[in-house]
Image (cartoon, rainbow, N blue to C red; front, side, top):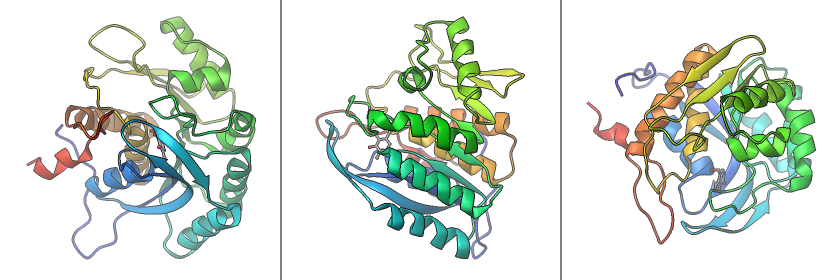
Length: 278
Ligand code: PXL
């Protein structure tokens, strides 16, 4: 990793990036992962909490949804006063919350880029989105997105397409883009049993492929959140979407390399490697 985002001098306000997402009591994913990446990339993280999860390294034992007026209030409060240059969504839990976030976003009248990470479940397979909320995700939020960043399970939930090879990955990117985001990123994840994990980005006309070294670790909790948070941070600096995705992919690869064990289950990816980078 050699590249970083531009840093603001001490005393000067950095770029602001808003995360609209759930908390993780285990500190690995969700708002905790977003906030670590924001800090390590030198942007100021703003937070709208939509749900509080009860979870540890073994799984998600439950979650509590925040009332929609409090969610809308958090977003309006910080954007009205502090301002933001980009935002991302993570766990949104329900169709009511998705509707609230979409309506609040439209009400801001902002042209700041919005990264939508369509979180459906934890890495343990525990649900973080009611299945009935998929329609709201498709019809209300994706049309507002600058970039949507599903993994292969989320692609299947959103499009019905089972990605098994290059051709189906392209079909999925086309189907996702047709739902309204400016750019769709289909993360390859564990698609191919090669040393690489290709991600495919599509804007309706051109495909961009991103290949990174595959880091085989059992500790990849929070990887999707970290990628989306890094992409939003890069967009906040005015980067074009393909450059922001390339940057985010390099960032999450280094966070995967630095992942550590925690508890009795899966440990988190770690943005803390940045502290020891020269
Ligand atoms: O990594 C997806 C994710 C997002 N947000 C919260 C989570 C998780 C995964 O567990 O707990 C709050």
